[in-house]
Structures are given as structure tokens and as C-alpha cells.
Length: 120
Image: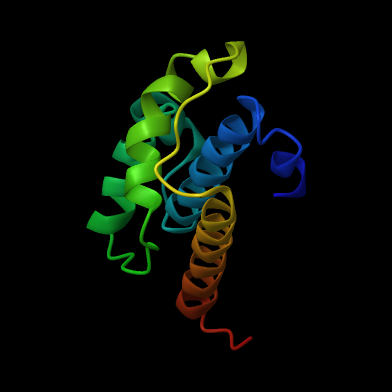
């Protein structure tokens, strides 16, 4: 999230947060057997839909704040507005956003490791 910190006053921070959420959730889906093509066709950049999918598959470690971030950022990310300079008001403080993203990525990593039967 170091790159995101540079854009605290602009839209780039929100853009990087949306990307991190998308990649984290899609990594879990890919691990559970969904193809990249499937996620591209059926989820596209819909963060809320990806979140619903991982929850339906039993991923219970979604940190608080992810649903709120997905709800705010998802529509803007999906239509490309975050890349064009839209500056959304995030529902969490920047430091909390960073920690929430770290927690999401750590939870995905742990879930993937547990399913594989590895002990880290």
C-alpha cells in the first residue's frame, strides 16, 4: 500500500485500494477452482459481487470495512471513474483502509494455505 499512500489527496489511493480488493477476492476464487475467464465474464470489476461469491464459498474471514469499501469503490472502479480522477469519500480513515486491505490479503493467504493443508 506504499504506492497508495502517495495518492492520499487524489483518486489514485482509491484506485489502488479497489485493485487490492479485487485481486485478493479473485485469488481466493481462482484457488477454489474458478477460472480467470469466468471471473472476467461474470464478475468483471464488481467488487460487491466478488465479495458475495467468496462468502458463498465459505470464506468467513472478510475483515470489517471491506463490504463498505466495495460498496463505495465498486461502481466507480467498474466504470473506470477511479482512473479518470474521481475522488470518492472513503468510509474509513486512510490508515484503517491500509490495515483492512492487509488483513484481507492475509486472510486470503491463510485460507489458501489451510485448504492446501500447509502449515505456515
